[in-house]
View 1 (cartoon, helix red, strand yellow):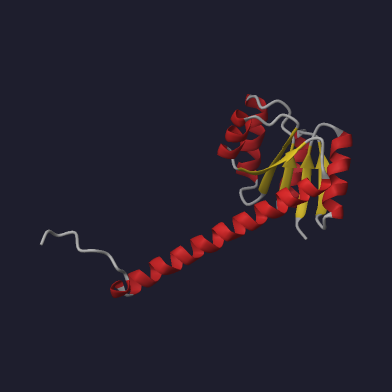
View 2 (tube, one colour):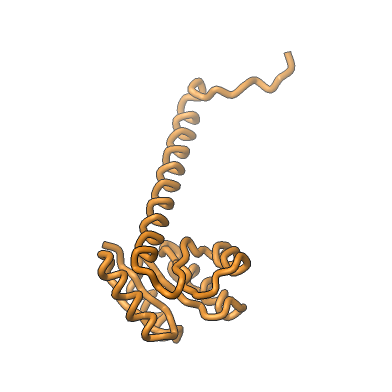
Length: 153
């Protein structure tokens, strides 16, 4: 069970998403609007999942994503929005957003988005660990590495 925190200025949306997450087996450790007090509470609770509706994807909204990423570097940040265009998605991904939840909520789609994102990230991390292990093995025993000789014959 992963700990989740929901940031959204609409209480109805927070409650609905919270219910979906709890029914999906996640622990919602908190929710709130974008006030500094809620951001501080979230940092203290260290959730693994953050679902955030930044409102308009303007500089203020994007700065919220930057702040979350700097304060909680290990958290999986999901952007929640009714407005998903290519520019917003690209800007969000460049700020560390790993997944997207579209309003209005569909419980199955929300849980599948979170599940698939977690699986994708776990697969990427396993591959990185394997690559690191292979590199360390090559450093320990260079004969295991098949690199062609660059010198002319």
